[in-house]
Image (cartoon, rainbow, N blue to C red; front, side):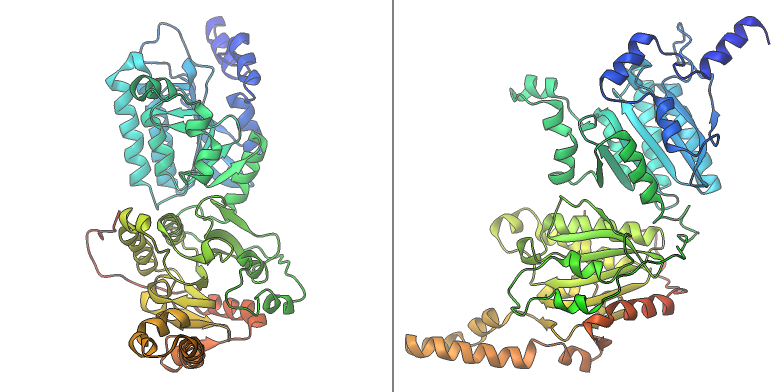
Length: 510
């Protein structure tokens, strides 16, 4: 190897490769790790096989090797992953033609060998001096995000800025992990917004972790540091298979709580009293297996990965603590996307139901609760994975149908004895059905009669027995045996095969 070649080779294998000390220090001053430090933290030791190390920018007056993105393959806890990691110290991690080609190349190979694609995002966006080449590069990446959606898991870890059209690539992936204080995602930056609208806003206020975890719902998981982000990523991978043809590995060592009698005690005697559905979930799943996604967005519905008897499952549950567990626009979209992800990668869906209906209101109607609510119907009906539903308490009206009902293809539907399954609650039903009769009574008699009619309605309709008699419910179960019933249902449906009608593509409401 001649002296010049050796110098190039050596620079590529040093921790400060291609970086001036000034840029290296600036990365650390911003609270961020360098790209190779990140790879060392994330991947198993000595597992990384880098490709395209010597690629340089389209205009390579300066020999900026790697062109601002490191690509290759490694392992995480022994599992093969494809990875691309943007290097902010080289042209701000901006994307040009060669940069994009490297990412596309590793994505194509990942799809061929069937392994997850992980993107570590830290980029100022499109490389302005490459013009249309940069735009074409992003288009090529978007195409692969979409083409390989549902083929292999795609995970984006935001470790810096992600601005402009670049933000659409993470949005097309299955999961987004953001890190507090260093992650930003936005289409139009603060300067442009100020010029066009005279609104003054910071990057963090515009597209920081708090915005995307609680308002836009874009981020699935939030970490306090880069190290925690990688730990979160590793945990997330344990619930996912390598690709759509494989299954998630079962964990043999199972920890469960000893006293399942606590489960029934979580439900209040008063059917209108709130409680935390997470306490019901914890009584069903394996201990320390809970991984909730988007916990601060649309909090009236819970979406989480967990394990039951060692098997990975997706949990969808109404949350009575928030908005009484009603379903609104954001809850519909959140749950529909989660169900679709579970279906893509073969994860059974366990639904825990306590829902009094869709959230009423002019704002919800005008903003499209019908259109967005239909997404959840579509997701449940389209899913072919095992679907198991437990009605805990209320299941009223259209919300009964949408939450994993037998009519939408659920394989096993159980109800607790406390379940109330009806078109409406007692007060609303009696008020509508007996309106004319009640108006004929004196006001004092009207109140008494209203209560009598409500009690009669509750005794006749607000129980699970009528639904069970007609086969809409497969069994009315002891709450403390809920976990046992779910395990048996999972065993029975483990080899389930369901074929939908042949078609080019369904037309999901968007």
